Length: 453
Image (cartoon, rainbow, N blue to C red; front, top):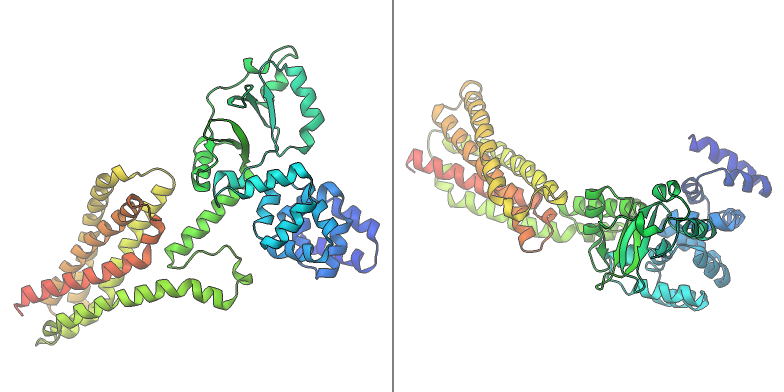
């Protein structure tokens, strides 16, 4: 779709005041594209266009806006309009929005909402942040034992338009315990006189209200589900989570992991909408920690100053090789940690596999170490003024540095998982700092031993 061309057309209709034609043009667009178009307008025009949207579309468009857009819309509306909008939204979308508002505004909005919806939203707001309960919805199709296919289809036609999804139907007993699920396809192909329990799948995959959203996303990915039921501690169905919310969770968790791997505190805000001071605050703590920890590198160099000041230019040669050695070690550690973190995230690796992972990475390191050390030896011997002694010391140090780096890189994320820390914290910055210290120690230890300094 040529968004720029569509935007120009919509802008022209808006400027000309042709509201009927603008409304018709908007109705032909996807809700996501309408939200994107609204983002390009100032507050006054955005509210004009938003009010042109039909009731059944406006709530959907509102759910696709970012927090900044939604706040601008709410500020331009009076309370009655805002309350009506929240009433028209699906529960999970309404909760997501209200969680971002100040407590006073939330209280005012809820006071005007429908009593039943207010109770439901308050219940959702009490669930822990980032839990299954906080992202679920209650708009799903449920049926009790004894319901016939004909009765189920009639109910779907009557209420299905207000449900988040009708692809999966949930079968409950009288105490609301989840007994099984029925796919809409199976229901459509069955005769009207059959009862739903004859068609249901009793091997139900579900999550609990207090499960972390990352666990939910992993479960949905593992079993290729379009939605997953959420049950309480007594296995009573309280809601479902649909795949569109799971995609948002995956994006959020991946962004958080990327930020942690880059030594930054996670942020929920978009980059261009985050203030400079907030960005600096998120980056400063880890930079301070890593800067202070890097002083150990300087301490190691100082400790081996007699080696660096030795005769025959050996000290200068070793100093010149330090950046290459540290960079190679850091890169090797980062490679191993990236694969370990990914394996943990996808459930391919568990803590009990630490021995297997370490043994595999050590064997990889032996191959890489031999190749890189040999190439490095030839490079120093033939293309630098330094002799074979320097080439041997540096190449030997590189061989053992690679083994150490791979070992640290693959085990630290697993150890972090063992003590309930995010494995992403053990990514490049921390591993690079540790490997730098190790590589210098190995280099100068070999140098002092071989040179007998």
